[in-house]
Image (cartoon, one colour):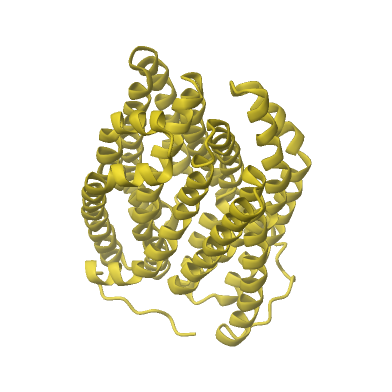
Length: 441
């Protein structure tokens, strides 16, 4: 497989073309959340939406905490790709698969502890708690497949095959939507149907693309994947350090969003449900903007592997600019279609009314958050994980302190203002560490 060739000035057009497949795949991911929210929001009782909100938020925190399986894979693979070291690419892939299976086993074993923690921290009715437990009993067994998908996506992003990684996510999302819709609407399984939909979709997707990847490695990289020489102390230590940094960083950022769910629950199940609905807008914008970040990860790692500083600087400048412009377009679309989307998601009038009152936050957060999303991609591609970790720790702790104060005096609006501050802090702290990446050239 030939190395990709880039000009010294990586244009906005080139970044957009590389990001187009990722746009469609990233659009599919929050679409699953919107469909799940819509399925639960139209069952006539808030408890279904509240239970799904809490259960999915917790499981997202648990699974995203191991996002290093994607992010660490991208950084190492893309830099090895830049050097032309294909054997190291395959070994990195296999090392992370072993780690993923061990992590998944631990999560499954600790499922009772997860459920106890939810009951302790969230103020919900007994019926809602039963629904949450029903969801967790099924969803926890999808973890091995979901973590494996992280690794495969990281592999294809690292070698700049964004069409394949995008196809994988689209497949996962479509299957998830189809299974969840059938199980909820046709079999009346409510929360259990949503969990089963994720379980079935995850395993079908990972089986299909694991077989595809095995053949891809043999035909394109001219290598046969074998579990040999994957236990090398220096390589494992590097992988451990990168993964640990990203693990801590991801744990903090997922806790920040879980904190939003927690504080929202303190205002009552109606506000908890509304925040769940509004977060779909933020998540949709995030995944849209992450298309640039994802495509940039592989290019940044490649330019560092090849020591092409001018190309790196061009990627940074152009990707940040188009990310911000795209965020503005997303906000304009929200301005036009906000009420129509809310009315589709829920038929409960009170939830619609409260959602309308929080319209402003959905509009202003995406452009502000565009900078930190893109900087994340740059730091991941550079494997500058220690600085990512430190920046996130500071930002999250500051966010928690700010949110406690503002939500006390301004209620749910104070919580959303705090979330905006969190995005600003993420950008500022990453910018503080940016010059360290230039020392790699």
